[in-house]
Image 1: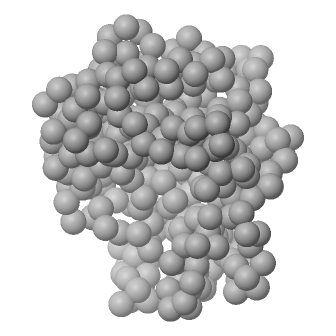
Image 2: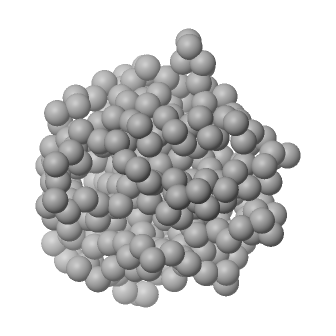
Length: 315
């Protein structure tokens, strides 16, 4: 499997990595509804068996539960994948999520993640959101210190603007950025992706399939049936007028992928991976069988003419 080097690091990533957001389960504002841990572990194993070599999670996913599930899935494996996680989103005893980039808070988060993941060092540690903005320098400086202390191999950011990355880079080099990027979320194309490409910052795209909208399996009925504790029930992209446009785009991906015996999801992922700044894309998988519908995006490439067909639908 051809890999891609992540920014200034020594990490060589497969084009797709396992996303562990949904496997955190319910119980907080950003949950995806009920999730069976045994299915989560089976999904992780399937992804690794088929060649993915990295997992992306975060402390806040399931309020620590996602990291614990990842640790269970990796226990005893001879060939362990890279494990990435994040800090900055913290929660209280009632499960209310807030933001902190204070040094003491990040240090506590790091220790808690190390314990939940059952590792001595985290391969890539990322600031989840640049909030509060005025504390970016303190937070990033703390990550740099933790790396010097040997608790982190590499450090990156998520959801940062180009200007915010410039501020952080004055303190310590940035290995990677994790932004939302898909056919329905393209805001980073104007400034953020060019900045990363010019400054050797790897880019790991999250929600490359539009949180399920571009998988080929989404329907109006399925959207209407989403459980109340699934954050997507509140997302504009799952509501009109955006929903009609997104479902039409999904139909195009089904048609285009079908020419190559590929799924809509694999076509959506191939479009993301076509961008020169993108190192890899995160695929959220909740069941083992879902892996089979995305895995060929590791190899599948769309042509410039096919990309133009997709652009025509968007226009």
